[in-house]
Amino acid sequence: MNSLIDKYNIPGPRYTSYPTVPYWDENSFSPELWKQSVIRTFKESNADEGISIYIHLPFCEALCTFCACHKRITKQHSVEIPYLESVLKEWQLYLQMFGEKPKLKELHLGGGTPTFFSPQNLKALLEGIFETVDIAEDQEFSFEGHPNNTTREHLEILYNLGFRRVSFGVQDYDPKVQKAINRIQTFEKVKEVTEWAKEIGYRGISHDLVFGLPHQTWEAMENTIRKTMELKPDRLAFYSYAHVPWVKGVGQRGFDENDLPSGEEKRRLYEDGKKLLEELGYIEVGMDHFSLEHDDLYQSLIHKKLHRNFMGYTSSKTQLMVGLGMSAISDSWYAFAQNVKTVEEYQKMVEEGEIPVVKGHILSDEDLTVRRHILNLMCQLETTFDVHNSFPELQNAFEMLEEMEKDELVEINGHHIQITEKGRAFTRNVAMVFDLRMMRNKPETRIFSMTI
Image 1 (cartoon, rainbow, N blue to C red):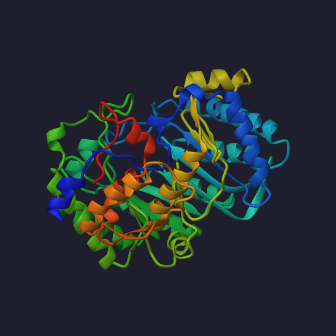
Image 2 (spheres, rainbow, N blue to C red):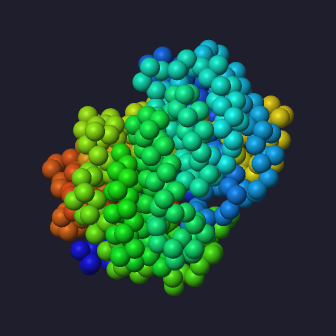
Image 3 (cartoon, rainbow, N blue to C red):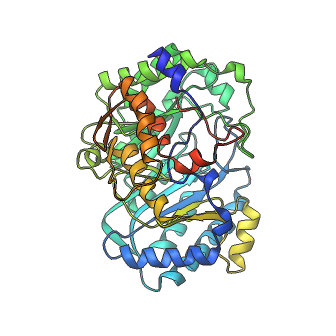
């Protein structure tokens, strides 16, 4: 396995979209084309699937130096109400496009730190949205909670508004690691908020763990996993730390690169961590995620309903995902759009009645074909190609896969590809074989994190 890590541990996308953001064709994109795409998808899918909403709440009181999200660091909570008012105004712009009441299937609050906002302010935001929609009977509402500032009131108010899923960012319990990433939180605090959530009735409690952090050792990682098992969350995200300090604004400069585990050490963190999680009853779902058998994430995998988008893995699918807030990304299936990346510009554009998108991509027929196959690989670990509806490089792609087949990472049967259990760690590498936009325009500088 060591030689495989050396061979395949290269920079690559996480494939929450295809094409990936660095390969969006911004020249052929315009806000008007984006609006047309939204209207098309809404008319096609709202009655059956409904829509998803992602709300980006960017404020944090302190900078976590492992984080690559778009955020604004402040302790001034006076920013809450003006920002939320802008989010509601942006939502009104989308309602005008729809022309009829949307059916809300999925809603996710991400950040930043959603629990930076007071429970009452979050309640006002959500009630402002809910009064304009029909809520689907099988809705999926979730939010990200920082253990240090998630209160019982946050959990109770959001539960009463229909939220059943909460994800707590744990990362690692080792004090040296926590100091390096500027994320100091005790096991006792995580235990308290997790137990509150269970008592209130949340049925989709998740903990986020990260391997590959500065100063991280297997002994520390094992301790973190075993402590996590004491709390028995329904699911886990076991992410590889994405070190991308060259990306503007991510703030990953709080430690020296020499403090990061070597490739071999990081490999052990992943492999031994995965093995321990499975021994403790967790089942791997897609890439980076584990769940208990009763959890909807695992059930969606079994019933082939697992989906992946900019919110990560979800147990249900909608074609239209509207991203609200600074830097939020929207997906109409036929197009992507990202909002402007500063709070001030976002609020100014919304106040002027403009959809605050700064860039995007209109998917070609070829993009849609490749997107479907990469989504199949990322969610179901398999896909089948129709040779009559493919692309010129398909033969080249299968030739590249032959090397992976020799390494027992994939099994190829005609035009069907199956990622093996051994190949799970290399799912991103398999998907990259079909990334036509990256193949045709290989990056001259590093733009992605490492795949392992």
